[in-house]
Amino acid sequence: MGGRTGERGSAEGQLRGRTVLPVRSTGISRAVRRRVVRLRRAGRPEVISAEFEPVWSRIAAWARDRPDSLAVCGDGGDVTYGELWSRAQGLARLLGKHGVGADDRVVLVCSRGVEFVVAALATWLAGSAYVPLDPAMPARRLETIVDEARTSAVLASPEHLATVRRRELVISTADGSPGEDLSPPTLQPQPAYVVFTSGTTGTPKGVVVPHSGLSNLVRWSAARHGLDENDRVLHTFGLGFDGAMLELWPTLWAGATLVTCSDLCRVVGDFVAEEAVANSCTVVWAATAIAEQVLSKGLDLPGVRLLLTGGDALKVRPSESAGYQVINHYGPTEATVVTTSHVVEPGSGQGPPPIGTPITGVEIALCGPDDLAVHDGEVGEILIGGHGLALGYLGDAARTAEAFPTVGGRRWYRSGDLAVRDADGVLHFRGRKDNEQLKLNGQRIELGEIEAALLELPQVMAACAVMTEAGLGALVVPSSEQQVDERSVRGGIKDRLPWAAYPKWVVTARAVPLTPNGKVDRAAVVQLVLARRTTILERVRHHD
Image (cartoon, rainbow, N blue to C red):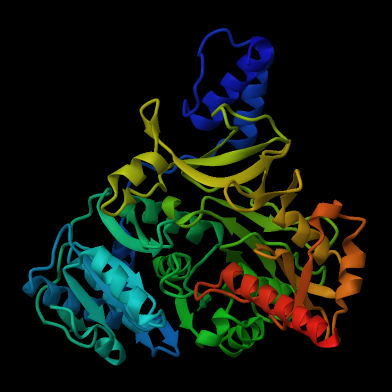
């Protein structure tokens, strides 16, 4: 790039990326400077206070000032703030007696609700970081993660002790040790938790998140969502999913009540609505696919003021008659759960909802293949900076250095996600660099574009497009009890997509398959599509 175009890219790079991009700092024209000022006013993220307060300290304050207020209730039992703090202190002292302390990691194999919250707080009070595992995950994967985490101890709910009985140090969350209050260290860069996500090699990778990043997220969420002691927040996420951090800690930070519900809420939107109403919830968190079920069906949520969602690309908007506000969230595990948010306007025909603007303390830069900032309206990779960055991948310095480059003296995370920034500074998600974009017969195909076309059909409530060994396939969920005719589906999208993007195989289902974390299970969709292909081919052979 040269001339004024190069100057423009450099100026935007300095603004949006704070020198994360290769730039020349001289020769910026007056016109470009004016543009920088406009962008700075429109999109510069709010700067968080330098004062640091660990999450546990606010919970301790509630335990002191309002000990009888309900902290957690629901399927996992009830506990007040005073009882919660007392149990966490006792369990932390027991960990200390076993030599667990600073720089250690403790695996949590606990039921959602009281047992998990007690175990997590106890781990922090002992000066350690917790590693949350979903007890429902396959035993082999659980064992693999425990090995990879290289932990000092395992805290398990009484009902899950048998799952990890072979470990050297396994402590029940029902145990504890009396004594004086603990004063844990509060260093900002100290790890708060380690979440394991799927790795490209097949081995889960542990993302190490510091207390500073979690505190930044929690303070933002509590303020942005207006949480206070009168709120009751429905807890639906699986514990192995970092989205659970958004349900747990902002709720308890604000002195509100966390309401646990049936595991069915992780896969069925109707159960989310039922549990929210039955438990007088005011705020509901739901994984994207579950929130889309609630929105597509127009489920009533009396008493609920906020439906908060994230974890995947949201494609559905609330109806004009919805009595609650929907807020969409975007963010990778490596940037402490959430980096952008957006209030979703009701109505249809406006395209997929945006992912919004950066949260407090977070910076976003969009860059092209040359690592220069892209122009508004151009697709670029999302680079994330600021207070939310993880410390890196556990025991993998090489992968950490690759994913978290230091440029201009500052760390950034390369998300691999693509987005477009509009003229108002709002970000619109455009899929992944690695696997959402395909080329068939020389034509570039976006799976998201296929899904968007399918969702425009009135007979389709949800859709997922995949590439299989047999070609493009799609799973659709009918919007009514009537069966969807596959030919009508293909016919309905023929004017919306290039011919190369027509799904060769279409399968219908009552719901889109989900992973235990509530994300679309594309591998399961591939298998359903291939099974459909096999059935059709067998019919053809039989007919012949």
